[in-house]
Length: 300
Ligand SMILES: [Fe+2]
Ligand SMILES: [Fe+2]
Image (cartoon, rainbow, N blue to C red; front, top):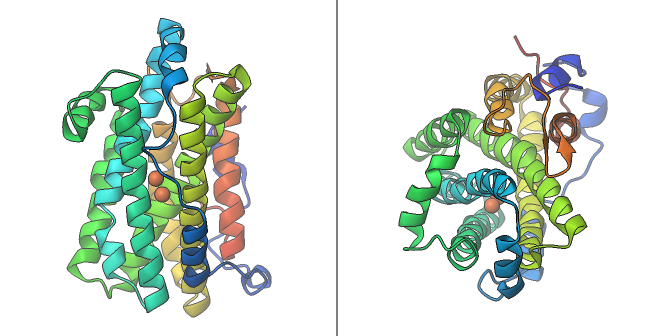
């Protein structure tokens, strides 16, 4: 039974590039990811939410609190990753990358729209997106604020100040695609979707969240591709990525802690134990690092 930090400490550490892996794996490039985006369109406003309204009323009160904590982190997170993305769009290096990056920004806006519509229609929390976000902020923890309002915002500001700064781009992609999307978002999407599907409730949410997860896989694929290229271009990028991960993983681990619990405690949520959740997050990250050619970071 271990949390994300313990798993990382037990993992295969290394700031050294694994040369044997580095040139082996061919990832989809931005042009291919752009074309995939065209084939994977969906509409946040077309999903039928009528059954979800009744299902939500039948969810017990104690579960509602956890569900609102979890989904509110996603709602605010989607808004943050939409508005804090402009620096990366400015940092494109060729036309295919520019085309792909603009699709990701509109994806994140679509995800925010889905949550706004869901909160309005099902949770009866309305008043427009700005008012909704202000209200649901009560659910997020301090680590969330540190990651989304400080680390992500700072990384974006550095890129906007100088879009040609490759170090700033590596830091941003590591923060955004490896930690926020690749470690946290994919884990939350997996556990929440599985739990709701098994119980056969809130089918509109499951449908929307499945589309969001498909988009997120494309986003993480871009980040993995970018960092793999960065390390191939300059081996010193590996240490930069590892340093950013070592700085942010302790924060990410805390983001996953449900209200009323601590990182070291055991808990169960939506039918998943702490070990399930942290184990999935660790796997999701370490698998992608391996593709980039890196081991897990050495934590102090
Ligand atoms: Fe998203
Ligand atoms: Fe995303």
